[in-house]
Length: 175
Image (cartoon, rainbow, N blue to C red; front, side, top):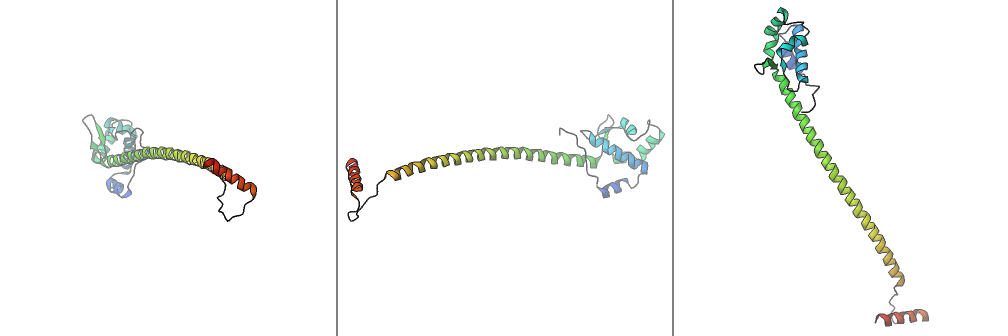
C-alpha cells in the first residue's frame, strides 16, 4: 500500500465490550494509541513512545500502573524490540488494504476497457465514414450510369425517331 490509510471502522459494540473495564483516562489513551498505530504503515507502535502519545511526560508511576493494569491486555507484542499492535486494528487494516487493492485493480481494468472501447469506437466511426463515402461515390456512379442508360423498348412501343436512332447506334456499337 503506497499511501497511508486515514480511517478505520470503530464498531461500537466491540469497543464498549473491550473497554468496559477501563477508566476514562485509559479509554482516551487506548483511542490515541489505536489512531497513532493505524497511521503507521505496519500498524505497530513502539512502547517507549506510548506514554508521550497519551500525554504523560515520562514513564512514571501513573503511566506504568495504567499500562500494566489496563492497557497492556488490549495489545499484542509484535517483536522483542518493544513494538506492539492490536488484533482488531490489524484486522481492519488488512480489510482496508484488500479493498484498496481491489479498487486499484478495478480502476486499472476500467482504464483498459475504456481505451479498448474508444479504439473500437474510433475504428467503427472510421469504417462507417469510409462506407458512407464509398456509398456516396457508388451512388454518384449509379446516378451517372442511369442517366446514360437507355431503356429497353419492346417492338410494340412507339418511340420518336431520335430515340430510335440513338438506340440503334448503341446496339450496333455494343454488338
